[in-house]
Image (cartoon, rainbow, N blue to C red; front, side, top):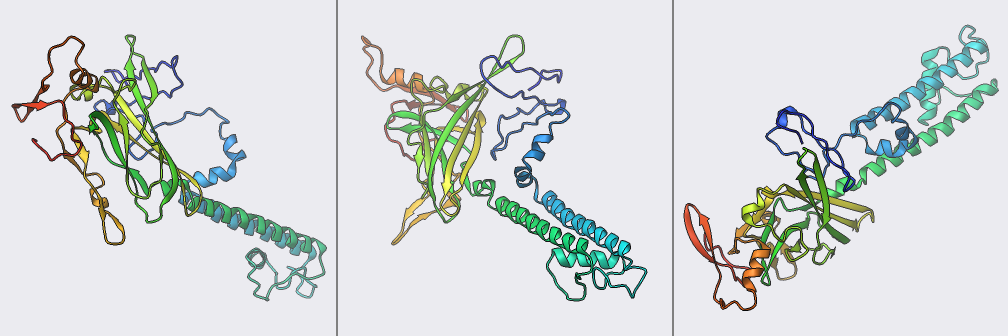
Amino acid sequence: MSTERGEQVAIDTSYTTIHTLGRQNGNKGRQLRYMEEDGRFPVVFQKSSGDWIPYLMDIFTTLVEIRWRVMLLIFSLSYILTWLFFGLWYWLIAYVHGDIDNADNKPCVDNVRGFTGAFMFSVETQATIGYGYRGITENCIVAIILVTVQDIFSCVLDTIVIGIVAAKMASARKRAQTVGFSKSAVVNLRDRVLCLSWRLGDFRGNHILEGVARAQLIHYVKQPRGSIVISYKDLEIQNQDIVLATPATIIHKLKPGSPLYSLGPDKLLGDNFELVVSFTYTGDSTGILHQTRASYTAGDIRWGQRFQDMLKLGKKHYKVDYALFNETTWVPVPMLSAEQYEKRRHPAEGSQFHGQVLTSVMRNRQTYQVNSDITEEVMQQTYL
């Protein structure tokens, strides 16, 4: 977030614990999101010198979280460097014992007469190749101890490498990519109540054991002095506990107490907020806890639409058409905020007006009169 001159604006943290967000001069036309659509946070930590020490103390987690190419490079170098290190020691032992200059001397390691032979013996020992051409003898106790140390080190290194690769392949981030939210959220009527809803689906064949859905509204408020306050408020969700056997629709009712209760379609695009949704669940294949995240801005919310039906009943199975996962259709919905809609449905005491409430809506430069008291949840499109 920046001013018109491109300067960064400080965010007041007196109300809540938040991160300071900013955008560079080249991003003046783009609003920086609190969280990207794929669930990643555009946050960069500026570290002081010495802050890399915690990463070394928790080296296992560090190696699990780094990229595959970096991890493979580190593992390859670890093996090559250890082969060179122990090969150098074998060469030193052979040099001190006189195996290099004197061919008639009883060697510490058979057929090791130079550094190349010592390096090959180190590779064969650590990789347990066992060609049979080079081998340790009883002539040098130091060489026997060195082989024992290399064997123990090889077992430890292989355990670390296999553990990190297995943990990285079973990473929760990969499983989270197969569980996703719809690209947009919709506002429509359910049982005479305006509701904000979005879809959640599992794109894999195996089903999730259980999961909990959450939603949080991130609201940006600019103060007179230029500081920006980011407030957080949890949204109440109907049926948070979900077994995701089929795609589910997450529903938040726009009722008193909701931070979106007074927000109508005319003010929707003008308000500066972001809806952050998450689904924390346990996979049935691995039993590992995963989390899928997404966010919706005001431009991602479609007023007066509903998701198309994607579940069909077959002879033996329920059929889910994921091609319709993000598809929506228009339905007649009052172009009012939930607060205004409730006031018109329940007029004040003493009012003599009991007829239908008509709302003027502008579509394609024409004015339509829409009945605000709509009772059916699923209807065909009446106008575009």
